[in-house]
Image (cartoon, rainbow, N blue to C red):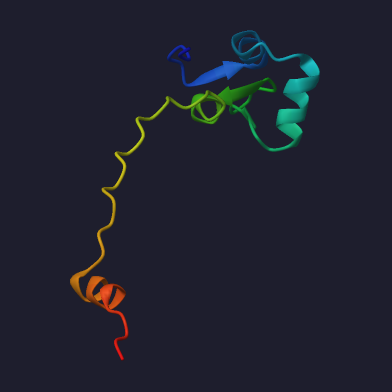
Length: 86
């Protein structure tokens, strides 16, 4: 799922794209998860693309390769191998 390329989105566009209810959208705004922006001289709220991108699930990353098993160092191996002889 990719967000259309626009810098600002209207509330309805955000709700439609993410499938949010009006209540869910209000909760996200009140929680500070997304912040409405008011363009100069405009009383309508817009939502910045950069804020909305944070709501998209991140791409699955390839896990890092597993580290090779650790081998005992020469000193610890010799100590572990020694037994008391009386």
